[in-house]
Every structure is written in C-alpha cells, then in structure tokens.
Image (cartoon, rainbow, N blue to C red; front, side):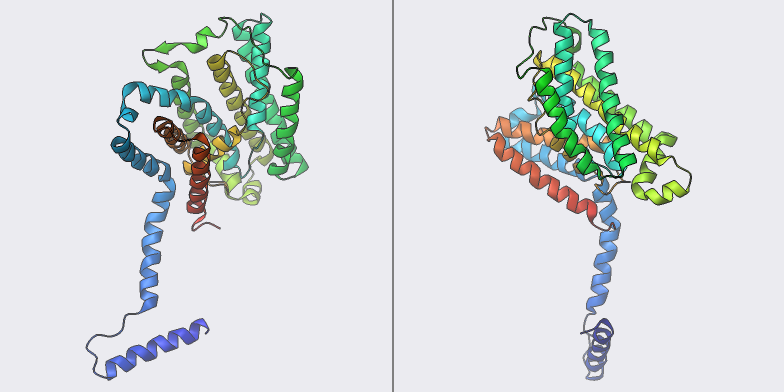
Length: 347
C-alpha cells in the first residue's frame, strides 16, 4: 500500500467512526509517530553528546552496590593511573576521527617509540634529549601518515593498516626481537607521585584541557570540524584541507609518543610486542565519548569521559575477578552501541 493510500484509509476510518456516533475518534497512528520523532529529535543530540557521561554515571551507581572497594581513594588513583595511556591515545585519535579519518597503526607506533625510548636510555642518553627525540619522532611519523592519506587519496583505513604491519616489524627489528632492559633509574622523574596522584594522571588531565582549547577556541580546531563535516565545502570555503589533515595526524603521533613515554616509565623496559590492541582502546574512548566515526562531531572532554568509562569497567571487572577476555567482549559491545547511537539521525 502506498503512502497516499494509507492516508486515505485513515481519513475514511476516522470519518466513519464519527458518523456512526462513536464519541471518541480513533487515534491517528501518524500523529503518534510524529510525536515520537519530536521526542527523539529533542533528546537524541543530548544523548549523543553526553553518552559517555551517562554510561559513567550508571557505572558508578552499579559499582557502589556491587563492589565497595571501587569508590575508595587508592582505587580511584589507580583508575586515573590506568587511564593515562589509553586516554592520551584516545585524545590523539579524536583529532584524526574528527577529520573523517582513522588510524589503525597506533599500537605499532606505540611499540616502536617504546623501544626507541628504552634503547636510548639504556645507551646512556640524557632523559630530556630522549623525551624530545621520541616526541619529535612520533609527530613526524604521524605527519607522514597524514600526508600519505592526503596526497595518495587512499582510504585512511588502508594506509594505516599497512603502517600497522610495517611499524610493528620495524619495532621487532629495532629491538632484535627481545626486551630492552637495563634502564636503571633514568625514568625516575617520570614516575613521580603527589600523594596517591601519579604524574601520568596530571599529564592526561593537562592534555585533555589543551586539546579541548585547541578544538574549541582556535581556527585550526574549527577547520578540523569543517573537514570532517563536509570536506568539499571546506575546500571551497578556502580551508587548507591538506595541511589541516596532516596536522591532525601529527597531533595523533605526538599523543602516541607521550603515551609511549609514560608506558616506558611505568614498565622500565622496551617491548616490541607492546601496545597490541591499543588502537581499539583509542577508538573506543573517542567513540564512547561522543565522537562520530563519520567525522565533524566530538569533543576532547567527551573522549576523556569515554576513556574513563572504559577503564573503570575494566577496573571493576578486575576487582570482581572477571576474566579479561570477557572484558574485551564487553568493550566490543559498548563500541557497537556507541557507534549506533552516533549514527542515529546523521547522514
């Protein structure tokens, strides 16, 4: 039955019921559907923007009942400590996703930079020179990936998938297939704590505030959103699409380097197998925090909350003695739900 015919039928039923003396006309199903659409239009943007915060709020309520140790001071400090690495990776991934891209090489680049950091420190290079070099190397590799995506016009998925394999292989060769240890106390300054609060927790909070300011208050941030929203319109309006996209990937590489430094300070060694699956954590943190995989929509503060939500789930499962593989399954389901919510009403 076509749409016009349906309307004719509804009008006939209503007129028949009234003429037959029925005191109450039949309800109009199309009116109800219109009401549902209005309700969805009113609440959906709010839910999409704050879905990570809503999930975190529910999780805290559940945790308060099922695991009393979750809301204690030492455990919350542990949560912030565990948040630092995946949260920093997710912040970098947010810039890439906002431009409409994706980076699957995050875990492999993380492993390579971890090995480079450990190798330089083991060989006696000063900590400040090692930190500067690793930050530069991460930024440069990120920019190279962005340039490859931009100028070859290949899909970001394909380019970064190739980089994921290549960088992992380079990390294996660089480390000669073994752990790099013997760092001594060279990473001690990056292992500092203020009471129960580790330096890494301060780093992730500062990085989130900086990223939020960059996206919300600068021309570069507006250009990132514009490219992800409509690349062709952004180009026609005079935005430098190429340089903005390359800069977004470079920021992602910088965040990977920062995370690799914190990981090296935490483990005090270099591992070619480090960071396996971290790209999933980075994408999950951004998407659960409200960043659309379609690009052009999302916030750094939302990514922080999304990553905190995912890490908190993991910590709660550890406290309850649940297998980590089960946690991976939950993480996948959460990503699917978050992506579904973000796609509702868009394109």
